[in-house]
Length: 120
Image (cartoon, rainbow, N blue to C red):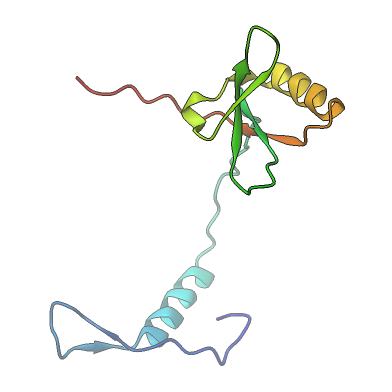
């Protein structure tokens, strides 16, 4: 709204009282005035690099293929299920990613999914 003063919002019907109509444009304008009038200071949140990562292959089929490990003969095992992916620490993941690139396998690193323990 602050960038485009002519923007309009559709009227919204309140579900609890069928015939009460609130003009969402007026409501949004009032909210914007409130926010701009108050000096809101928020703490900056620093985002750190993930500790655990997984390696994802750039797949021509457009499906993500996660590195699951290697067979005894050294062949790589790929899976489409992220919970089966091999989890690396950040440093080892970068090394493995670089080695894959050297072998002509395009890939990238993602944060490892959280492990959720099922309830009993």
